[in-house]
Length: 138
Image (cartoon, rainbow, N blue to C red; front, side, top):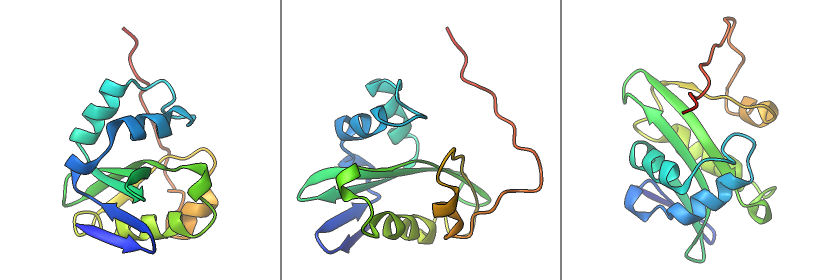
């Protein structure tokens, strides 16, 4: 699928994802700064990947891991800083959440600092405890 918003194009076509651009975007995050290019490529290959382009250059990404029926995990949502604060992030999120594969699933996400942004889309803090198993080393 493809959507437009002014000069921006958003697509869920995995083969259009620019792995180098996504890797560069993630290098400046607290959650994926050390992720290798190879791991970025593997993660894009195995997820529903939304790539945001401006003038033919990828400037944003969001990924969803999903079973296509019950549960989805939203991750790696990022825009280049120069493309933030103009409603683009909200537009991107709305397209992701309205996607036919995602819209009827229970959507999870983890964020350290963007709770206010995600609450605008109906995300809440669950009543139960969230647990995580950190990455294994070596």
